[in-house]
Length: 332
Image (cartoon, rainbow, N blue to C red; front, top):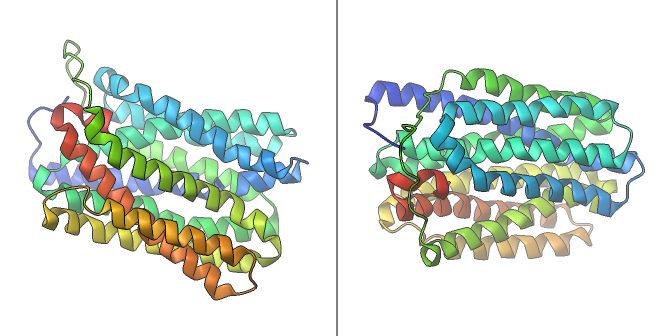
């Protein structure tokens, strides 16, 4: 899938475009993450139905991700990212007119397919563009492009939904990925030759640790973002601050993990520390929900975010190191 690497100026321009695409598309994604469950509750759905929004979204995301490496070989990174943005954003514009729980979940499922296309193709393109010796730092910067929108959109989305209802937030969450799809037209295609054979499979024993670490912490993150506002509805302001602390600490974790991974020279060494931090933060959040203390909720969220940031960056760098250039798509 990868041929000769482009020159330095071309790499910088392509990486800058990818960063802009990532910021806009992930801003749309995170803006709706806590708001769609609130819409379901407003339609008469139970707490289980509200939680199902994230479950359905991530299920279709993962199922789509499994088929993206083959799609990258046939159509290239740019095409996959553009289509991913269209599927992530376009259906979201339908949310305000939907009147049933099943319709909302159906639209959410389609958006999950778009997110699956985006996450695999964009992550693989980072590895395609950047020399291996700089992959840790590049992955950290890419992580900032993912996490920075969350620092703003998670609390802002909740605040806007509380003051003006979910409709303006739902529409904004649809428009942003569509803007990202337009920007993505400037990305390099990076299409493999049609006759190129499929790369060999990833060695399962080697990828268990980074995959398991990422899955466990990502599931906890989804549950936290989806349910925190529902668990303490009378403390919306505090929840907003806690989500800001979570995403801010996640940014710090991702930025720190990149140079550390390069310095250690063995990707994956930060995973145990990241998982332990995330577990401690999640436990602190669970205890803080039943406590009136604002600081404990914010502290738990911050510790969890720092651990998640470490895991995000180091698991990605480890997967690319295990995979090698011929298997960046499957690794992503």
